[in-house]
Length: 514
Image 1 (cartoon, one colour):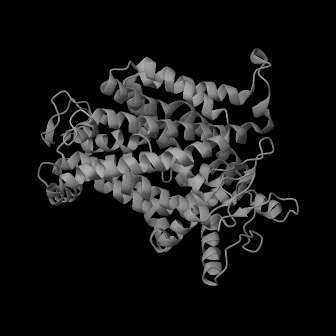
Image 2: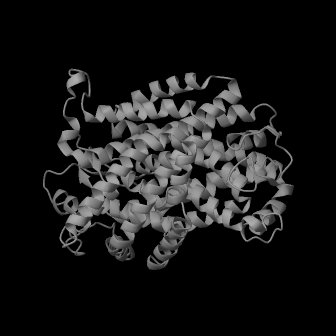
Image 3: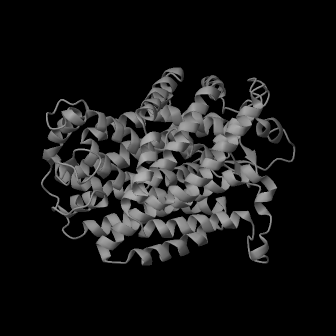
């Protein structure tokens, strides 16, 4: 089974997908006139000043929900894996895909806002790639094809977020806790399932409230502690930077033969971590209450920076400056060792152990505990975000039928098809916690790759409304106005929420923060 999954993963994550991610980022950057640079002050302002309503969460809460999906094991174990198999230069390519991916994130998340809807069953805002694929071209002859495309994406997302990707998070969390406290993987699995069951049954409002508290706290604490380690090793930083850039471009003789691996692992783990182009960000972006779609597009673009340029960089510098790394030839820890920093014990496994040893260089014995706690927060909030995205796409596919009672479990709270999805993700978490790391990561990569292929190809076709929204936003911004979106004025068909809800006299009361 392991070899079969690896073969599928190789086809999905071929060079074509790697270069598609990079090329799409370059193209969207040029088309948007590098919005990810020009609008950084506005990104920060929008995070500070948000809107709320009974149906939608604030921009900051939506950002926290997005970060809860982006910030996970990829920020610790993923960085370690990229360095182990791609060399230190993989960190540079993670930076590159983050910078370029911020423009991709703006496009996809703005589209998510434009084509969002309000769920008649819960009153909450819903949206994402499946919604914009099925609605953006509804007025054209291509409508049937894009409706099918939307359903395919929704089905793949339910599979990826409900079954394939959660296993990676629970596996890393269980592994770190076992190493730190000698807790069995099954104990971690049971505890995680209990906590998740409480949160996900509460709906998007509870998810948003949980994420808004946990995500900023865990990110700030992790970055701060990692920076303390890096500062303590400040004399190593010039050498670390030289190593990263020399490895990224094959200048260093030790890494010249794996320059292709540096690009592949950097992009692969970069996309896994920041999710730019994968199609996950638009789900949380659509849940936000804003007066203009571009506002949330900017906020979500900044989320890519927070994830990769801040958290992943902190992990990468921590590992490299403390010498807690080992680089292998090939894609297995059984390959020949090309280089190592000297701090890792001979039996250290690729993954969280790299960061744990790095922390231990300053606080002996505390590294394993700190990384285990960090991963507990990171992974838990990521799994919660995965559930939200899986549920959103299930509701897209089934509509009102998503709440039809299941005959075998009549009378229970939430006895419907959605409950089956909740059971599926809980089972995935439990199985992932006790599985091998290789199988868990392979399943996760397959899920990410499938979503990225479908979403990036789709937004390349549907990108134009995002640029119309950006130009409209900047025009109103330049005039000193608080931008308000009207799709009819911009000739953007299919944005039915904005056409009807915003013009309705009985719409929800929107509250704007001072």
